[in-house]
Amino acid sequence: MFMFLGMLIVEFGAARSLASSHPAWLMTFFVLHILESGPTICFLCHSDSESLDHIFAHCPFTRNLLGKATSFHFGKQLRCLWRVAFITTLWSIWHSRNRAIFDEVQPSIHYSLAFILASIKEAGQSVRGHMAGTVRELLILDRLNIRGRSPLVQNTIVIRWKPPLAVWTKVNVDGSAPSSPGSIFAGAIFRNSRGFFVAAFAKAVGWDYPLEAELASILHAILFAFDRGWNSLWVEFDSILAIQTLQRTVQFVPWRLQGL
Image (tube, rainbow, N blue to C red; front, side, top):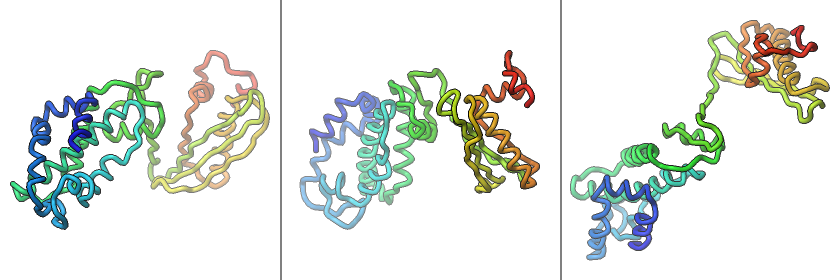
């Protein structure tokens, strides 16, 4: 146990900054031997004798906290943050145990998790490396209020779906063209102001190019809504070229699209 924790402190750079900001963590290694002096009741769970194995492995409080604090699968940028989370979790267990003994404070999972998250956010300001670029990692970093660093782009923006105003219907559309030219497909999903699903469609719409697939999706979505009397319609899509074509801000609009 001592060797394992010591290797964590030596190996992980983020752990060093954590140890420097929490000197009591370094003292923990020297005072843990008091647990070997004789059996006492665990002040975290009050259900078993206190020992190293019990506190850091078998105690219900520890198992619950470790399960919540380290239940992530991080990529490259997040690996250091995971290590900080793990080490801070061990420190929080020891700190909760001491507060229960000396201050008679009932151990709190919520208090410990808040301390762990605060330590992760602090470490996130200085850790190096890049994220792997997955949506899942980006959402985790955004939830932690830490900016994701991608090796491919300078700035990463998280786009969230927002519900429309009352009595409005929002449709998210997308076009697909596996080959260019080739068969093109249109798809759309409609939701109301409460975010509830209203309708959806996906179908083949002809033989053309990717831009035409995007525009066909928009057109079919508008016609779909018009046939059902949904006159207050918010159309959302992700094709900048399609937006520029509809706004006539591109320099050259293909002749076959100029009538839109």
